[in-house]
Amino acid sequence: MLKRLPDLRIILGAYALLTLVAALVWPVSVDEILRLIGSSQSSFGQVLTWARQVPGGAPLGDFIQFCIMAVIGHSRLAVRLPSLACAVASCYLMWKLARQAAVQQPLLAVLLFMLLPLQVRYAADARPFELGLLLLISATIYYLRLLAAPNLRNSAVYSLLLLGCLYTEPFAYLPAVGYLLFLLAFIARADKRRAFWYALPSTVIPVLLFLPYFFWSTPFVNPRWLFNHDHVPFSETIYLDVMHAVGGGGTTAYVLSAILIAAAVVACWRSFQLTDAAFSKRMALFCLFGGVLSTVTIALIIDGTYNVFFSPDQIVWIAPALCILMVATLDWLQQKSALAGLSVAALVLLLCVYKNAEYMVTPKENIRAIEDKVRPLLSSDSCVVFVSQGLSRSVLTYLDPELGRKECFHFFHTRVVLASHPYVRPDQQEDAESFFRGLNFSISKRMDVGQGTIVVMDQRQ
Image (cartoon, rainbow, N blue to C red; front, side):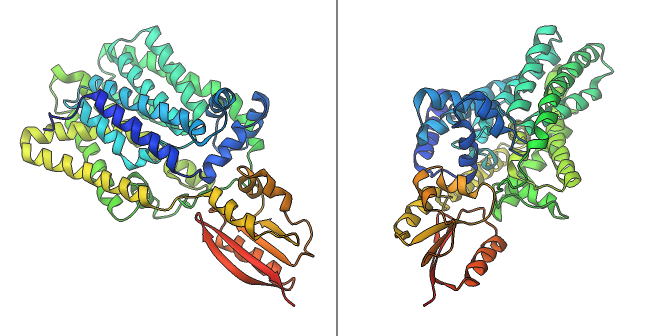
């Protein structure tokens, strides 16, 4: 099945080219600007001061971005370069992970990882998720090495990589919890007992080293941080929201995510049908399934306990394991029926391509377009209002600092322009418009631009 897949170098080259084009074409989003404000500071101390405001965030990605921008300057490509490099490197490491997990078609696992909608959205994104995935895949490789050869070196490297995950995106650490817990299923074997006693401190020590930063930064978290509309409140439908996120959104997302989840369960079940000769593969698949389960479970527990929003970036960390488990199931299915295996593989890849194509043509957040549209509307007797409190002004003036000089500080102008970025809620928009209607202003023009809104309000005569 799919034995004629192109060479890994060709796949990586094509992927690098596609992500480069996306990085050059896609406009910068609100989330990216929020992280870029931090990495655009003048010193490491100021970067750290900004990073501690991010809910659930960590500073390593901001530090790396700060260093790169200090060397090559500020441009759309420069700010996305870390993600591009990490995305391509992650695909290469996925090939190594697939080989170590002993799946029969490692290139198919790489291809699926490249196309998985849950992961694609971050490949050309100026945020630290691709760095987190790179560190997680590296950690998973060393975890499997630790199972095969329990020694201090593998244990230390695994621990350092998990520490890197925590200081990049803390949720990237969550698969390690499942890796460790599911290893207990093999504790009866003396060699795996030894591996467990190496894996236990390697998993716990990074958490202990992260706790000082966590407790230090928590009081400084910004309560008015801006969240995208893909963040949804914890509710009774949260499990459907998870499936929606895994599949990349839309109706077909449930079909794709259902196939991936079913394949993960089958791979877990099949792992215990393997012979003792394939014991390493049995452990790898079972522990990878544990990583998927722990990530989703702990993320939902945290969201429910603290009544915070669920977002796809909380579970993007299951992407590597899902791809390995999917290919392992396809390997088994091919043994039963080559046609069935090929059909399921083709269906999954086509669904991924469809979801990604849909995402490519969907209008993106475009802060630059909002700024460009606002500027001509401002005359000498007008000013701009950045709708909603907190970071809205910073977001809408980051790319155009001069726009901040036209901000309204009194309301004696004949015209006010309400500028709303894509994360402004409908109630916030209505409050702003109601306020100015009460000051004898009326709406003369309304425009939807870059997924944001611009409202021109003139003084009634």
